[in-house]
Length: 222
Ligand SMILES: C[S@@+](CC[C@H](N)C(=O)[O-])C[C@H]1O[C@@H](n2cnc3c(N)ncnc32)[C@H](O)[C@@H]1O
Image 1 (tube, rainbow, N blue to C red):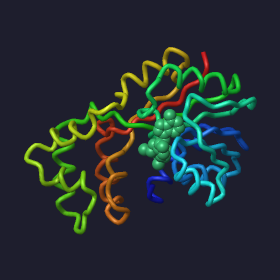
Image 2 (image 1 turned 60 degrees about the horizontal axis):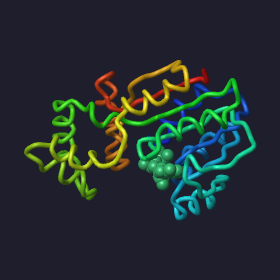
Image 3 (image 1 turned 90 degrees about the vertical axis):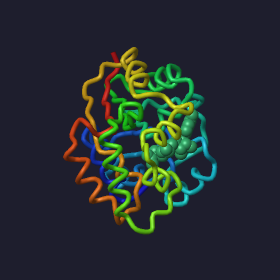
Image 4 (image 1 turned 135 degrees about the horizontal axis):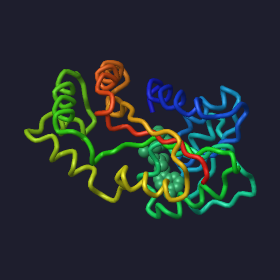
């Protein structure tokens, strides 16, 4: 994840953490967000299903281990359980949320940052594809197809309609077990582009407000 993307995600999470929080980050990837939270005085336990990624997170000093959520044993109670762009991948959604509830301290927070792929507006995607055309030396295969497409929505749907959860499904699963105390939209497409091009895409998406496809939830146990 780029520094810009990490900073945006960390700022959102930090708003909901008490001082010196014990945080469990599920799908921590290479540990960029965890490191940022640690720098702000929080203790982070990361788990990820991918052993190579866990090795890279450990290399930078994150207390990460291999685990496939919701299969994770812990006697500790956490002040926050965080999913950043990982919940849409986790197949057994209800069990994933139930387990998050089980490892949270009663006053703790469930914090989710994800995306609503099914809710993208064709006009927004079209504009994104146009903006991709202005980025030189783009070599991500998905982005190259997207910007060349006569119908960018068809490319988007083809690449996102595999086994990932819609935001509506994730939100409903959370609402069964938690009270959602905050829900907002956030820029997301800027995360796809190379770091040098991300600020301009982020500025454009910020102006889109609720038409952006990033989604953030903060929830408390019922
Ligand atoms: C799109 S990446 C996001 C990584 C990081 N949180 C970020 O925002 O950059 C999703 C991560 O979730 C992990 N993941 C997917 N399913 C998982 C599961 N059931 N348990 C733990 N990690 C999982 C993947 O290995 C991957 O590292």
